[in-house]
Length: 299
Ligand SMILES: [Zn+2]
Image (cartoon, rainbow, N blue to C red; front, side, top):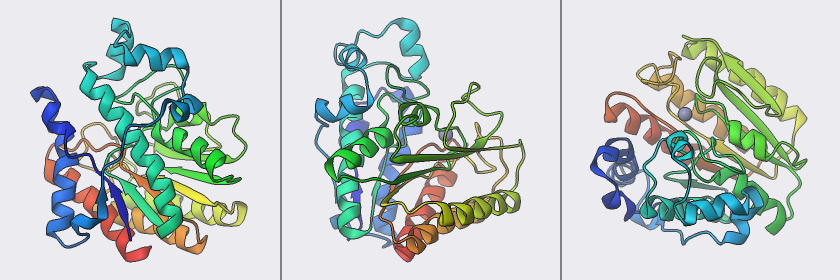
């Protein structure tokens, strides 16, 4: 059974000016059920992550600063969020959601988090709407808890997975692959195991060609026991922040390529959402719904 992490309570606690970008987290589960892609039984709510696991990826000082809401003004500005107790609580829950997804993916082949992909979070700081790095934490969890030796991170959000690359840089069991816009945030990129930086205006045909070549190469090179997929839909041509020109159809093909790859490698896959900043909520929701469609069809 496909297990999907979803926390239905947090959205009501957010300040109203932050509702729109967060609305997708509420709409996507409803739409998934409405379209019959999954049923309400597929959803689960995670508990708060234990500090033990958070500390695998984050410095204690940083965790303490968040817990006590004592980040400096400039540190808060870099996160992009107003720092509130509710927001920190949500971060604890969504990070645990991705850890739970590891266990579910091992059991059922695939699991997903309706949140997560907080890949701009570093060991000692949050940036770009990311406070804790869920994928880095869950990777270190899988290594320790499930004794894994080979974990592949496929980060196809339009922004580079800089925090993930930094946290997992010296972790031999993790292979980080990020394909992103060369000129997109973050302006100072970190070094992943494999980085593909795309030019502004890259269209779907070009995008899919490059991705296929990379996946073919990875197919021979690596035998992952687990895959994380950061499935940001900010590669869409409608996105306000992305600089690429990928249509919704080609974005769906991207997802299909990733799930086919997981199938070929017979590896469990955890999908986390990443970003999406199209003007119309419809484009964002439809983009993410397509990811779930491919997941259900191919896994
Ligand atoms: Zn992004």
